[in-house]
Amino acid sequence: MSPDPRPLRKLGFLTIGLFDEADPRRGHESTLELITLGEQLGFDSAWLRHRHLQFGISSPVAVLAAATQRTSRIQLGTAVTPLGWENPLRLAEDLATVDVLSGGRLNPGFSVGPPTHYEHVRGALHPDTGGQEDFGPRRAERLIALVRGEDASDFAGTEGIEVYSRRVQPHSPGLASRLWYGAGSLRSARWAGDQGLNLLTSSVVKAESGEAGTEDGGPTGTDGAATGADGGPFDFAAIQAAQIRAFRERHPDGERARVSQGLVVIPTDSATPDQRARYEAYALARTARTLAPQGPGRLLFAPDLVGTTEELVERLHAHAGYREVDEVAFALPFTFEHRDYVQILTDLATRLGPALGWRPAPAPAEG
Image (cartoon, rainbow, N blue to C red; front, top):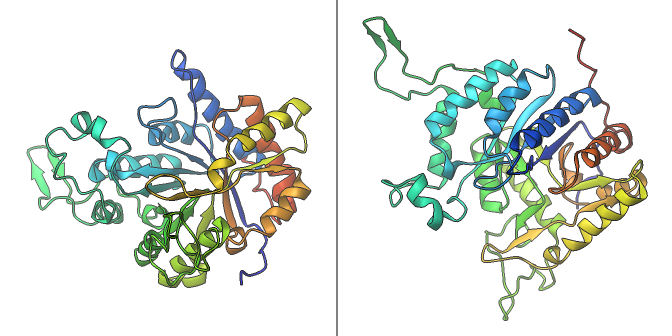
């Protein structure tokens, strides 16, 4: 049985940062403005998604570097960086650099697995090593070790006027404690716990039994449709809660291990009638994918939550996954307008967050 919901301790938001191909600067500026607004509203964190070869932010680390110069308090994260697109050594350098610029506010989230549409991008991404690349946990373990300050080279010393280090420079000592893993299955949640990472859990999980003792790829019906342990339909919230518990069972910090949930949550308290209608239509159009596992990966999506603060509090308190956490990074919908995001963020910070027990961080000092 899930525990009673605890007061919400940390409130964040996640955005994809869409832009028009003909005017990409405008979309990126909109994202930076939302991060600045988030700090002013007292949000604890702002997170960016990766979108490679699409019309969303392809380089969150670069955008967050800009955000460090426009903010002073809000935590800045990636949710998540797919490591199949990255060289762990170079990424470790970039992350440490931005963390130094931010004053220790970077929260890198990452995941493993082959790049999306790898068969189409392999020639450009890994033209010489495509068949040898390891897209599994060892790639992540390389990044973790490098961020923690383990040797990247077996040489250190001075050559002429050049001085060389064995480890990634700059080294940011606190960064390793702020690494997050984006997990969607029991196996990946357990791995994240074993590594002592923080856990990002989103609106997507792998369709498997809701019991923490089972392995990935849970039972299937005779027709191949996914079913739960009792033969009934899968319950997203129960699966997510089981993954969170499995993570904490393996983590050195146990129940104190940090977990952030990232559902799509859209409050309508101050929305106009037109906004409410568009928000409800958006959620309705995405409902079909929540009814059964999708694709060969058997992914199960959470319903988008749209409603007043009173309605959202009731639905969140009944959600088994939410009842396991006291941190969230609610995801903004992909295709809305800037003014819609301003309304949603304002309602999250001034209405829904406080109703869930959250208190905004103090506004940053002027100057």
